[in-house]
Amino acid sequence: MATEFSLVEEGYAVKHVLTVEDAKDEMNNNDYDLAILDINLSDENGYDICKYIKKLKISQ
Image 1 (cartoon, rainbow, N blue to C red):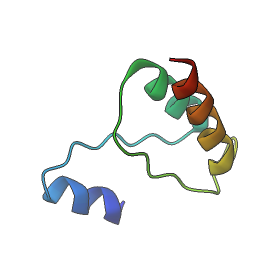
Image 2: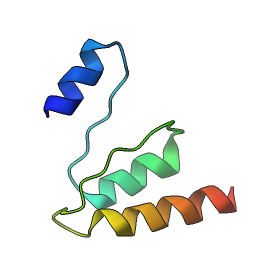
Image 3: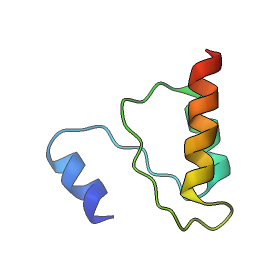
């Protein structure tokens, strides 16, 4: 949350999600320049979503 607050204060647009499933939905439907991920997520881990993003971007 501190990172989110700092980025917003600096003028960046921030989208915060709580699950890998929500992150996948966001990545499928939007273009992002940067993703900051937590390794310890409730439904999967951050490494899994990194692999998913890489496959998604390669297939586009």
